[in-house]
Image (cartoon, helix red, strand yellow):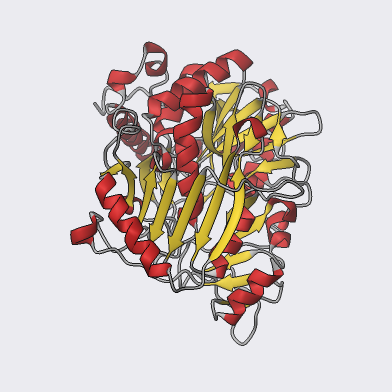
Length: 508
C-alpha cells in the first residue's frame, strides 16, 4: 500500500489529506453511468440474462475488437496489477485480477476486494478487470453509446472499463458477476445490503440503494460489522462479498458517524472531496464537485469489523428507503406478503450525485433494491428471498430515512438519531412489544411508541400540517407503486399481490 500511495503522489494523481488518506478526483464521471454498462450476448447469456435498459446487449465481435484496441493502447504504458478475491465464505469465492491505468484505482481494488494474506493467489484468476480511464471508445465503430463504457463478458470472465475513472464501476462490475453466478449455480441470494451482528449472533441485514443509509446504519459500535454493501445469503450463513467499504461522506462528522470518520486515515482513498482553503483538512460539507463524495477503506479500518466477515442467518431484515414524498412511516413491520412486494418494488429516491445527472432526489423503483446490478430477472432474487425468509422466520422492517412532515422541499429529513433508536429497538426486541396501528393506504404496521423517539413522528400523517394533502400524496405514491408493479405482475403470485397498497376510491 505505501508503494502505491507513493506512485499516486509521484504521478500527480492526488494529495494527502491531513489524516493521511489519499484524496483524488475521478474527473468527468463522479458517479456510475448505468446506460453505458453492457453485457456480451453469447451462448452463456442469451437465454439467461434479463435483457433491456438495465442489461444492454453488445456482440462478441464488438467486445473482442474493443479488447484488442485496449491491449494495444496500454502496451507501452505503466500499469498496475493486483490479485484479490471476492466472497468471505470460501465455498463461494472467486479470484480476481485487476489491471488499472492509475495507482489510485489499484488502491481502490486493494481496499474493496478481499486481500490474500498467507495464501498465494492462483496463477490464472477466474475473472480479470481491465480499467483504463484514458482509453475512449469510438461509439460508431465500437458499439457503445458514448466514449465511456463498462462491459461484462461471462464467457471470457472479463470486465472492460474505459473512459471513466469513477472507481465504483470496478466494484459494481464484480457485484453484477456474483448476481449472475450465485443464484443460478449456488442457490445463494446475492444482496445489495449491509450487515452487522450482535454479541448473541443475531445478524441484521440492511437493504437499500446508495444514499439510504446502508453504510451509516450498519456501522454500529455495539455490533460487529459484516460489510456495508454486498453480501450473499447461503445455506448456513450471510457473508460479505468485499474486503472494504465505499461510504458516501457528504456532511460526514465525528459526531454523527464516528466509525466512518475514524476510518479515514492512511490507506483510505477519498474521492472528489474539497479541502478548507489553504489547508489539507477535508470540508465534508463542500459539494462543488459532486454530492457523491466517497471514501474507500479496508474493512479493518472499522474497529469492530468481523473477520472473516461471515455471520449466522439473519434474524432481522431492514428495507431502507429515502421517501421523498414524506409518506412512509419512519419504521413499520411488514407481513411476509408485504416484504415480498416491497422487495420487488425497491422504492426510494435516487440521492443527488449517486448517478450522473441526478441533482436532487428523484422517485425511483429499483427491483430488489439493486435493479441496476441484476443480470437475472428480479423474480429470481425475490423468490429466493421469500424462501429464505419463510424457512428462517425473519422479522422484516421498512425504514424511511427520507422525509417527514411533507415532501422534499417542504418537510425535513428524518434525524439519524431517531432512525438509530428505532433500529436498536427492533434489534433488541422491545419494538415488537409495542402497540401497532395499520397505515390506511399501505397497510403497514406502525408502532405507536418507541424508546428515545417522539411518538408524534411515528405516524407520518400526523406530521403533516394539512392532513388532506397527506392523503392525496399517499394515494399518489400508492398509484406509483401499482404502476411500477405492472412490469412484474405476469411473473408474480397471489402472496406478493397481498402486499400491495390499496388506493382509496376517491382517488381511483
